Image 1: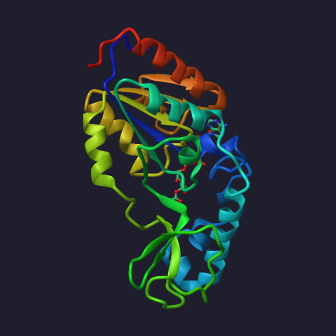
Image 2: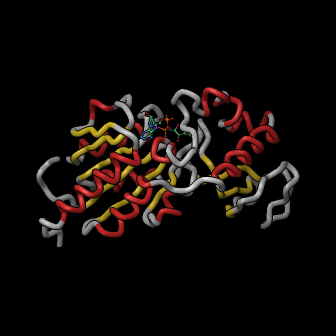
Amino acid sequence: MKPQEFRRIVILTGAGISAESGIPTFRDKGGLWEKYRIEDVATPEAFRKDPAFVLEFYNRRRRDLLKVKPNAAHYALARLEREYPGEVLLVTQNVDDLHERAGSRRIIHMHGELLKVRCEGCGHVFKTEEDILTTTPCPSCGKKGTLRPHVVWFGEMPFHLEEIWQALQGCDLFLAVGTSGTVYPAAGFVEIARRAGAWCVELNLEPSAVADLFHEHHYGPATKVVPAFVEGLLQRSKNFDTG
Ligand code: OAD
């Protein structure tokens, strides 16, 4: 690892960090996009064409999420945020809440959250663990047929991009964990961070599509490589005066 102190760390996580908790990734063998077509469940057009089918896809994922638990990689990143003497910001593409359940607090869900629902009529966003049907009324405006998952679909703008861009511009360590590097804009974050002078580290099961842009790589299951990397970072930080 580069011998310097890191004052501001930005971590991008993807489906690979939750794989060992039992949530299937998108593009691995047996992944979600092998079973479903993106055009059928993850676009605004799909929702307009068959809202009941799209809602059921997310209802099933929401029910599955409630059955699983955070793993050692989620806990390690929460520990890093708690114990590191510099700033740590987590940006996740994941719509699960496993980072929060593990204790992470500074977190941006750029692709939304499975446990939140939005009313397309009045804009109200609320938390729920319940199934949403085309007949479920919005708890704020009372209209039916206007509720949708508060997730970002293909063709829609990810959330909080300005805040993420600012953080990438100002970070000196960028970590990407468990992401295939195939979906933009997230796949382009390494380029922004690198241009801003950050040391860039990829932690993944295998080289991602943008692996060449990282300075350092650690390949293996997230529950092994992430806790080991965090431990190293915390040990090294004891030798630095980050004040
Ligand atoms: P992908 O399914 O594209 O990639 C998952 C990555 O995690 C792959 O590179 C795997 O090698 C790696 N991986 C699998 N198991 C792992 C493990 N146990 N430990 C470490 N790494 C592991 O998922 P994302 O990159 O997150 O967007 O996908 C990005 C976006 O595409 C998602 O947010 C979603 C999807 O379509 C939307 O729905 C808008």
